[in-house]
Image (cartoon, rainbow, N blue to C red):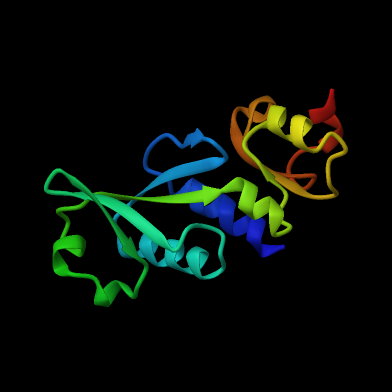
Length: 143
């Protein structure tokens, strides 16, 4: 299932700590074409929001993803170093993607864990984003 791998790859591109609140994960990515293009693909696949946020001249701004070449030069010329995307975990779960912030959330929401799932911050795996059971035994998590 490429969706898990895409989410994991997106999180790996993060340039800052991931922020989690109210079922939303906020990820800061470097404002470079490769990261932007990958985030845009994730948005097309409904893995992240269709908009991204950035700070320009001290003000937070939102913009809908478009092709890199269609962005104003004020965004792509290096003045903006990062942009933020968000993942709505509840929405992703409702669409059939079993994704949880940590093992506590997994146990709370889904005590009988699904066959395959992704944990963004698996404490028993050094806090790494982990696809289970591919990278970590789900039986170990339940202990």
